[in-house]
Image (cartoon, rainbow, N blue to C red; front, side, top):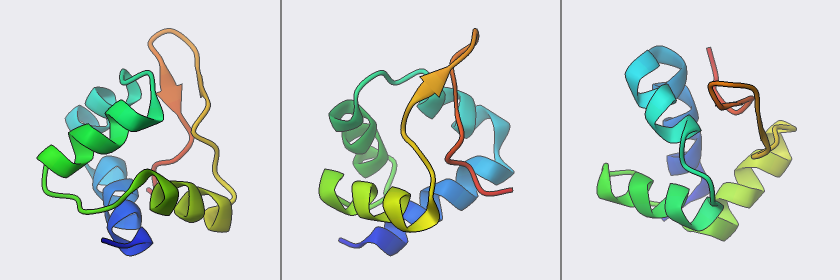
Length: 73
């Protein structure tokens, strides 16, 4: 498990609109991490927080449809 795996998800979401939309709809960080683990990304909630902190991104969502500014394009 590592923050590098969280970063891999940020990149994958930036490249794949369907993946990005799926994760944008997840409300809680714990459910977000659980879905990511099911999809083959191996990181914990703490590692996700660390990756977000280091990149300057926020898990907060906004808009309709819901969006997050965590995706790396």
